[in-house]
Length: 383
Image 1 (cartoon, helix red, strand yellow):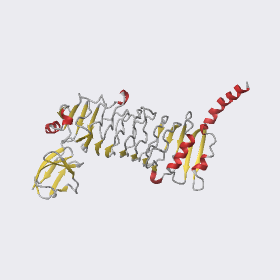
Image 2 (tube, rainbow, N blue to C red):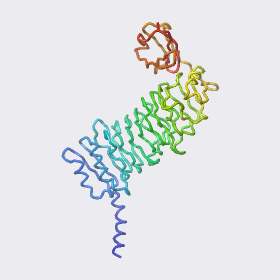
Image 3 (cartoon, rainbow, N blue to C red):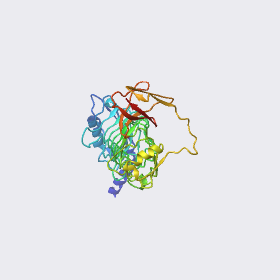
Image 4 (cartoon, helix red, strand yellow):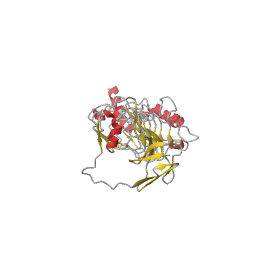
């Protein structure tokens, strides 16, 4: 009878213990080790508030992880909103996979500092019970594997990313199937890395301008509930596309390329699009160019049409002279986003840069060249 009463007391007391909010402050005179030693029963902590007057290191965060790692059946909120990090970077390992909170199942919610610029590698990998995190506006970089899962796990249901995010590394959201983005940050630049969104429920329709490369399995579908992409538009800046970038996205039916010249295809000679995909390109000249590339030729390729649409006035773009010695001049009634130089065979030679629409092409050999200004193509002869 006494044993039954004792067990009943434990069941009654634990909810009260679980409501405990604990605050610790890491300073030059009081280390993370000292502060965490004050917590006698980790399972009783509902919210851990960590403040600091010194920059927290990866080792400091691993100490928190070690303290709560055995608490697999419990859950807690980690409030780091008033913690300091060097250069506003949430630290990650330089090598190896021992991240800050890797596989910390007890983690329920994380509150990050509003000044954070980067989340380190493997930071929250396999935190399968993490339900909520504030990604601060101003965040710029998400390092590899930072929110990766396995076997399509995870509860973190993000529907948007900060508009300031410019770089997302490989496997960042791998198999986090609750990631349900409808768009990507317009500030993204360069590469969309391999497997960064594989096995997620992203339902994007457009790749942002500024993306030049989409790598293997970047948006690969892994199950029926992670195959949400029906159509996709590629930017004028795209230069390279891996054949498996959209592997197993079985519901994809419409693909649009804004560039006259097809991007370089890597990893094979056949894009892993569904066979019924229709590819839209700027005009009939572009159709011919795409049909010459084996990776595109097996699909239906059509020139974009504006039938039935309200068409905005076409920007006035002028290029001169037609016979160029040293400098090529371009003027436009709309902002010039990019200027790309191609040889007569359609190979991109350079992204031209210059001041006030004047571009130095004195290094070119005599011959015929093409210039893509935004979405339009011009021909000139280098003398």
